[in-house]
Length: 131
Image 1 (cartoon, rainbow, N blue to C red):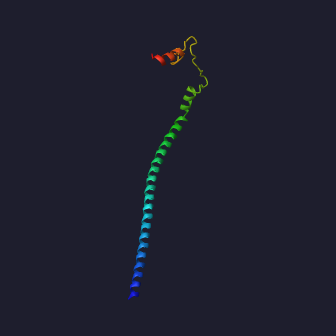
Image 2 (image 1 turned 90 degrees about the horizontal axis):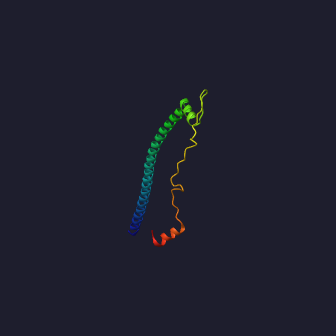
Image 3 (image 1 turned 135 degrees about the vertical axis):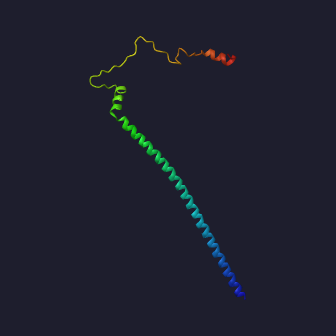
C-alpha cells in the first residue's frame, strides 16, 4: 500500500512537472508570437511611411525635371545671358548705365553723423545722478 502511494506521488509530481514545463513553453511561445506580431505591425507602419516619402520624392523629382527642361530651353538661356551674364547677340550693343558722378550719396542709417557718442563725464554723471 505504501508503495502504491509512493508511486502515485511520483506520478503526480511527474505530471505536475510536465504541466509546469508545458505552461512555461506555452508562455514562451506566446511571448515570441506577440513580439513577432509587434515587429510586423511596426514594419507595416514603416512601409506606409516609406511609400508616402517615395511618392513625395517622385513628385519632387518630376517637378525638378520640368524645371531643368524649362531652364535649359533656348529662350531661358538667352534671357539669362542678356540679364545676368551681360552677353549680347551679334549686331547688338551692350549698354551699361553708369551712376551720376554729381549725385550725393545717401547716408546710411546708423552712420556716425546720426549717432550720439557721449563723453565719459556724461556717462559718470548719469550713473551717479541720473538723467
